Length: 303
Image (cartoon, rainbow, N blue to C red; front, side):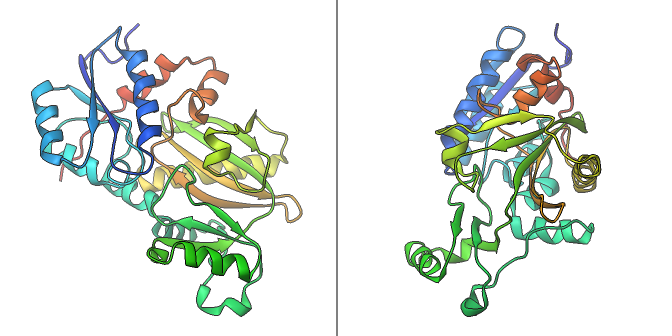
């Protein structure tokens, strides 16, 4: 049964120009398969030719754009600005929520202003004063690419030498020992709480997409921690103005009995191995129904 009857033609954005291009194509393909029997759908491959993208969108004349792009251009406010200009409703969050969430430095400041605990940011100008281990993070990257745990000065220097031409694109934080917990939000409400177990101490690209991690729905946590996960996730999602769907990632340090908010993702993956579809399924919601809810909340911002 089609919920979003006012939408007939759906353009699904695929690919993109970030290093998450292949993940985006996987998400877009899954969405296309789910929707093509109920809608007129068109997969639009996005590359670095913006004029071609505009031409393809205008030629198809979609009622709505389903944004499956990840990373640079796709979830940082740029494609959102373009679709606002074209006055076409699109899925997921708008310009401001996307741009803040994508930038880990900006979002970290935002979380702190909400009174939410985040890992301590490390200044590499004082190498001799670092309390190891620490972790590297691309400031505007996704899919946990280049997420590296650094245990000593030797590893820091090796990392800096490897990325010497773009060290300013990284930030560094105190590594938080503990359990990886993620909270899914759908229809602006909690969709599920999941613990992620993996082989090493960092939930990186390899553990997400190659050596698949173990996913545990509704993990055994202290009641006060579960309540905190829910309240902080909803607070961040709503105060940023995220639209319909997001995923909020935490580390839970059991020794301290303390949560640390890592980041919010406004474009959660929609691949066969992604977390949000698994959470939805645990709520007896199939993939088509998940896509329908995201479609139903599509919007175009006006300024």
